[in-house]
Image (cartoon, rainbow, N blue to C red; front, top):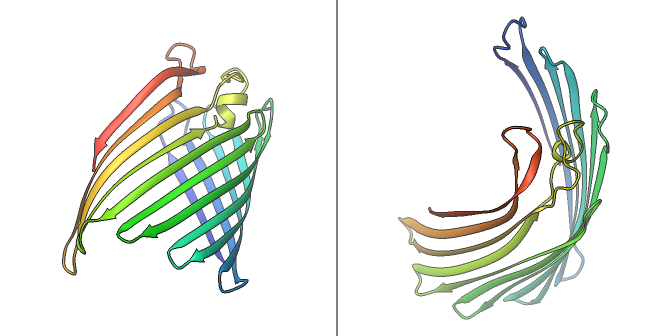
Amino acid sequence: VSFMHSYIDGQFDDGGFPDARTLTRQQVYAITSTHQMTNAWESILRFGLTKEENESRTSWPGTFSTLQRNWSWQNNVNLTDDHVVSLVLERLEERVHSTVAYEADARDTNSVALIYRGRFNNVRTQASLRNDNISHYGNKQTGSLGIDVDLNPNWTVGVAGSTGFKAPDFDFLYYPGLNNPDLKPEKSRSVEAHLSYDNDATQASVTLYQNKIRDLIAGDPLTFIPENINKATIRGVT
């Protein structure tokens, strides 16, 4: 069981409005229960609750609060000592309450994922497939594949690739006057390569990565209405 509570009182200059500030309260609760059903089958149940409330004491007063409930059931099955398959079922419920009347105030996501982790001598691999069914968007599929090769006890080289997506948030979709209900989810394709060194005294690694994003969401500089721009590419080294 875990929980967290935070409170932020942020004061700022709002022109002639006296003592302008934004108050933010956040509460996070989580409970996890792990059960060893058999020698080869581990079952993990999780429930999480996140509440956040923002109060604007400015020339544009109002309150905005969100509630998220998340359930997950993960089943890990050891096929052998070197090969593990996991099946994950998840449900996410998102709710919005505000002094501004949103066009919609609820969204649900039901997800299922299959993950494989294996070792073949000095080669380690992980692959995953996931389907998310989201209110307003239907089914979205993503996946990943990664391979690491231990060159010797100290050096490892690896490559990985994945696809992803991100659904627009409630403000972008439903905030009156500044929304765009026709927004598409952002979609991405990522690749990376890495080299690492590890011994008892020293650890070092370098990673090259590239992330190509389609239908990136950005606000129009004149109307402030969010829209999908064509694409963006992020490259880097860490």
